[in-house]
Length: 116
Image 1 (cartoon, one colour):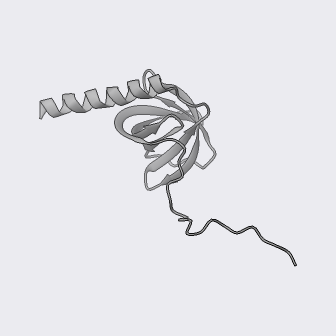
Image 2: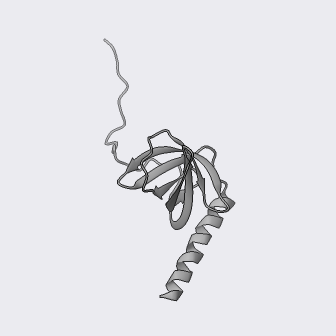
């Protein structure tokens, strides 16, 4: 009689299995893909990838470069739905780079709030 390996009990198929925690940000950026330069908004960020507000439709697996001034990172499109896209960086962003972008987003938000 063949034996089977039991699956972990009560494993939630919709559980967040990300390796890196995501940090909400609001940063304007550009996405270079297939010879085009698209204006996008970085919505969240981690050392391994980002979620972008992107009006264009790109296929999963498409190579892109995310350019946010001090950041120019090669990445691959992982998913896209209703104007939002997830990209995975080709190489992990170091903690200093991620922290600098997060602080830049916070500073921009504070400036906008002051003007209101």
